[in-house]
Image 1 (cartoon, rainbow, N blue to C red):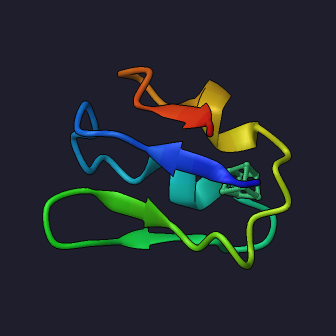
Image 2 (cartoon, rainbow, N blue to C red; image 1 turned 60 degrees about the vertical axis):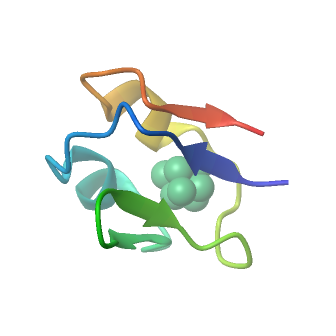
Length: 56
Ligand code: SF4
């Protein structure tokens, strides 16, 4: 399992700066989570201002 960023993402970058394992990077239209790196800590979910991140 990993966390997933949906289309509510406004590419603010808040999630990437709090991820302890640097699993989040900027994609074409939104930020994306590398499923293999994510340890499901949930830090990004709380950092997101638009509620775009959730466990999937
Ligand atoms: Fe990074 Fe934790 Fe979010 Fe996974 S759940 S992408 S490890 S901040």
